[in-house]
Amino acid sequence: MSGHSKFANIKHKKEKNDAARGKIFTKIGRELAVAVKEGGGPDPANNSRLRDVIAKAKANNMPNDNIERSIKKAAGDANAANYEHVTYEGYGPNGTAIIVDALTDNKNRTASNVRNAFTKGSGNVGTPGCVSFMFDKKGQIIVDKEECEMEADDLMMAALDAGAEDFAEEEDSFEILTDPDAFSEVREALEAQGIPMVSAEVTMIPQTWVTLEKDEDIKNIQKTLDLLEEDDDVQEVYHNWDE
Image (cartoon, rainbow, N blue to C red; front, side, top):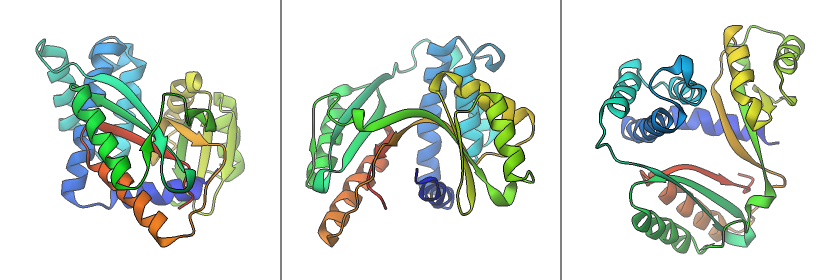
């Protein structure tokens, strides 16, 4: 698994300008709202899904005021927009596989925007299931080596004791993988031990990676990924391009 590249991407995202950070906060705000409505209310103590999204918000440096405001708004506003989960799958240049997870209050708008992003990058949207079989759904926790005082072996044992499936050491980070159903439990166990996490989420991990050699292919997939990232409806984009 290219945990190193994942870590580099996380650092890159965190260093983005305020406008981009505001967009990330907007997306997490939607996730918080959905977690309140679908996960069992506004109290994180009784809502593990909400606890997971709050952890993700904090890992992205979202201020506590923003987090609390999003939760209160979702809990108190019966007329708040109802967001639906929608997933799109498709192909980028040279058969690269792309999965798009969205939360939307207007499926037609989102479908049109996603199709447009694929088309502009010379790719195309496929049928449901056309590429998801090339990915494994896993809980993934990334720990920055510089922030973690624990030795690698001790961290590995702590993760495995908490119920993790796998542990990998990368150049500048550690990667912990879990079964999606065990993710909350593992994350909370490590959090209780004070282990700092730069990222903790359930994600889609490619089974194999695709290398793009041509400049045009690289330009095209970057165009698609940028357009998808700019779309407020799009929560996550998974792909198997080996950047």
